[in-house]
Image 1 (cartoon, helix red, strand yellow):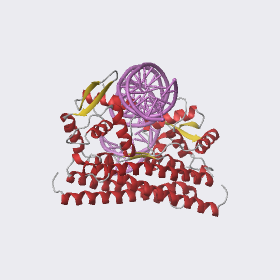
Image 2 (tube, helix red, strand yellow; image 1 turned 90 degrees about the horizontal axis):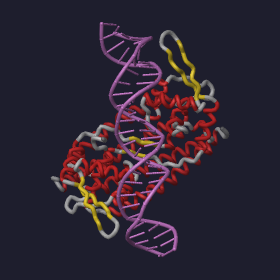
Image 3 (tube, chains in turn yellow, blue, purple, green; image 1 turned 135 degrees about the vertical axis):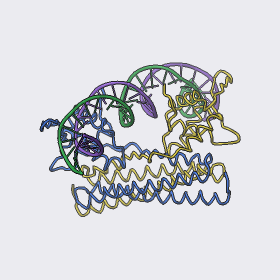
Image 4 (cartoon, protein in one colour; image 1 turned 45 degrees about the vertical axis):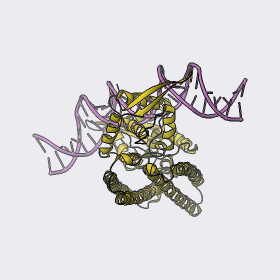
Length: 191
Length: 191
DNA sequence: ACAGCCATGTAACTCGTTACATGATTAC
DNA sequence: GTAATCATGTAACGAGTTACATGGCTGT
């Protein structure tokens, strides 16, 4: 018995609390897409199977309510947040944040062992990372554009801006490192 | 049977490959401290129990060799990287990096649901985060100072510089957000 | 004498993943 | 007709955590 809700549970619950007035009724599938547009950049976008598992847990906790939709043939379940769910979510938000952000940075990790690679290899790795950053930044930019300046999406927009600034900073740092690596290559040609 | 080595395995193996000439012989405990000074900031510093588990796995894979140290009374095991280990580590570094960095950012996550909090609460959260960032930045700064400009620690120093720049950028962004939240508070006093 | 650090390990458990299985609906 | 997308779930597994257990060594 999993007992209590995790941060990921609350993250998903938060996605169902987007609108105060006209509450969303989402399928697991739709919730996954919403997670891909938001959670992915600052947390984790859980696998589909995990989404369904969490929804079941949230339902057991009374935080969401499901309604089966026996349309024609296919049955879909739509979930909405309950008032109980809103209360727990607010309670959770009221608690002081204990954990510092965790970064799992495979490029930084490898750069730590740069002395085991050739300078060219390090440079190639960093260049590929700059490309990947550009892509990511583009994806987040698209999300940001979708949010517009609608007052309802003020906070999601703020977080998206945060993310974009972060990616910009990251690109700058990486380009600097690239120069540093290339510079030292020139001075000490071979490794 | 766990089969193959993970990124964390290679991260720890990399910590044992610090010096090419005079190879380190570390206990699990010492390895943990080294991880706390480096891996913690860009990857994860595994729990003690995990360190011992990984060392056993690396030993099974022939990547490290252990020597029992029956001093007086207490027996300690010291691990050093083997030539096989160096080869696997190099092989691993030669592979293209497939994964984009993963960020688990509890503050950004909560900010996403800012509309469920009072502006004061959001501001307080961000202020606490700025403090925490300062602490972290200080810790990393101490590590950076220890590395100095020794050519042997060039790459670790580069990564530490990266991290410090990152924390600086993060603090700037957070302060901006803080202003944005306070600004909108003035315009729309209560929530 | 006692706290705090050094040192090693096992056991239970949780989170989340991939792989598997199934099938309806929609667009071309 | 067939590929892509929508939709929902189960099963096996892996990585890593916390809790537990044990004990030596060091400084005050």
